[in-house]
Image (cartoon, rainbow, N blue to C red; front, side, top):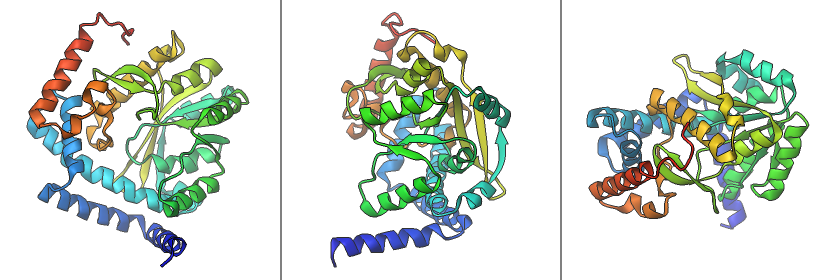
Amino acid sequence: MTERSSQNIAYSVLKFVSRQPIQFSRWIAQALAGLVNILKISKTSNTIRLNLEVSLPELSKEQREQITRAAIRNELMSYFEFFSIWGSSNEKNLSRIHQVHGQDIFQQALAENKGLVLIVPHFGTWEIMNAYFAQYTQMTIMYKPVKNPAVDRFVHLARSREKAHLVPTNDSGVRQIFKALRQGGTTVILPDHTPSIGGEYLPYFGIPLATSNLSAKLIQKTKAEALFLYALRNDNGGFDMHIEAIDEQIYENDANYGTQVIFKTLENLIRRYPEHYHWSYKRFKANPELRGLYTMEHQQALAKVQQIRTAAQQQNKLIAPI
């Protein structure tokens, strides 16, 4: 079998899976999550447990274990929902959005015609929101090709269907986003990832991590409106969207300060709904002293984290507090 034919088969399988009822996708995800939670055989579940203990040490072991089980289930469900969303029409996806909390905030920001920066963390099922915003505004979004060619083709077609202008994740793409915002357009940024190269060391749950401050730079240099978004599945087979304003302090001081405003907003959201954050990302190794965090013995890892957190707290708040 040639590589091209293998890719075509994989693409056809993705199309088939995406056309199944979203309830079926959720059922499969729940079944897989049940196996992972019962057998505890997944390395990902260990990553989730460690990330929770690093981020929310104030919780009891029982509370964190309960959140871990729910987070594994919710994250798997989100991934299966993504395929269903990518394979569905915009009309179908719009019908899945049952409520939009903060719609007036979005409409008011849109009316300002100053550009919109939509800040979307790895939380809930964020992919469902693209169809909603595509109704009202032209979106310019950075797109990094997926390593698997079949998946990349599948996702790229979904993005094109939503009429988003896809730009590369490099300086050229950033320039195109600046231009779009200055013309009243919209971009979407996921702020809680580790940059491939460089980045500023900013506190995330008290741990200095390499961080991209692109979101804040876009907002501050263009004076675009900034909104914070997330979507959660509801009990009726659909999703509820949440649109929230961000503290006006994001426009003050420099991009690092603005990024801290975003992180504080995200941390507050996570503390409200910790079971819906995608905890599987190895975010805390974005500190040079924590590169091997996820392969360390558990107590050694926690001790190292506490050492770094304490040192950061003792540096006289060199980064302006929020």
